[in-house]
Image 1: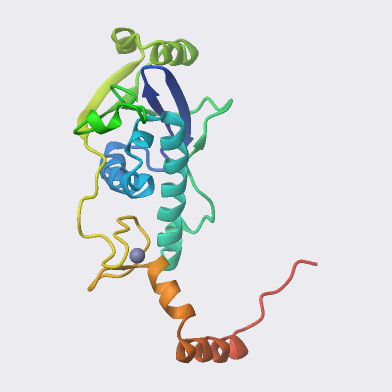
Image 2: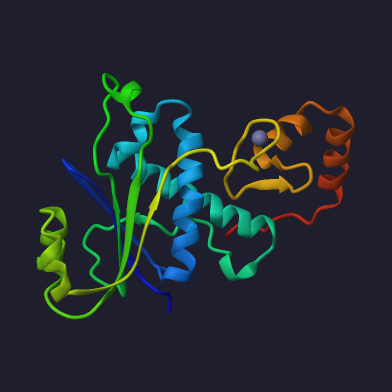
Length: 219
Ligand SMILES: [Zn+2]
């Protein structure tokens, strides 16, 4: 059993709904959103207005989620051996214990984003109480947050500025979960670029392939 949760990424004009199967409780999700904020800033790479569009952020959440999975696989943590992102579009599924709302107070356009100093997200995490989940979803979409008390019990609220937090990859600044080396911090992408250019490492890989057991193909 996982701890299932819904994530609403909401701006004044649009709400995108995601769902996750595992670890939707606050102890996991608070650092997850903070890590995601630095990752999203890196993804946006100067196109700061993207950090105010729910569609773009929802795609980045799924990508971040998959990178968290890949990082677990690369560290041989079998607890997270599933080979797919856990966060996904919600669709018809109606099974959750937690609800998360990532609120973007104001959408920023290319025309006005240079006037904006900081983008701030407000994140709220709630535990499901009781009631009609479709009515709850309508209240979220229609921004009737006062009505949510009927359905949800608020557990946490915090603000994040999506921007580079420092301590990312020494070469490209990547701040996500796929760090290949800690000291100096180098991401898996930069390590792969280096490895692909190196004849010695290429010959070592070819040697490793010769002695590797074959992957059995399905009948
Ligand atoms: Zn890098």
